[in-house]
Every structure is written in C-alpha cells, then in structure tokens.
Length: 82
Image: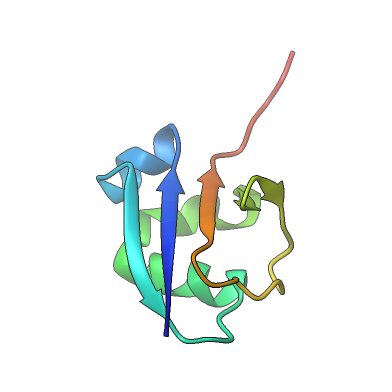
C-alpha cells in the first residue's frame, strides 16, 4: 500500500465536501482506478469525469499513469476560457 494525498479544486471540492483526502492505495493503482474509487464514494463526480483535469506532483497526467508513492494528485474541474 502507498499513501497518496488527493486535492480537489473549485466545484470538485463542493462535490466531495473537502479540500483534500489522504488514502492508502495498492501499489499499482492508476489514475483511472483512483477516479473509479472516488466516483464510487462521491457519485456527483461522475458528471464531470470525462472533463476533469488531473495532475500528479504538479504535472498533468494520463488516466493510465501509475500513481507513485507519496504522490500529490490534484483534480481540477473543466475549465472554459474566453
């Protein structure tokens, strides 16, 4: 198991009800698996699942990336510009 800090920004914070979580995850957990776990616990995240941005240790990351030990994973809501 590995310890991971998960940060939520803007509306995602409202959906989850907290600014961050700390979880112990299995060694080979990917971002996609973490998203599945979070959506199971916080179903409101499902509506933005395909548009959330995810960063691992301050670098944007793909869903198939394995989360490293002691990582900081940040979830951002969809962003529109103008």
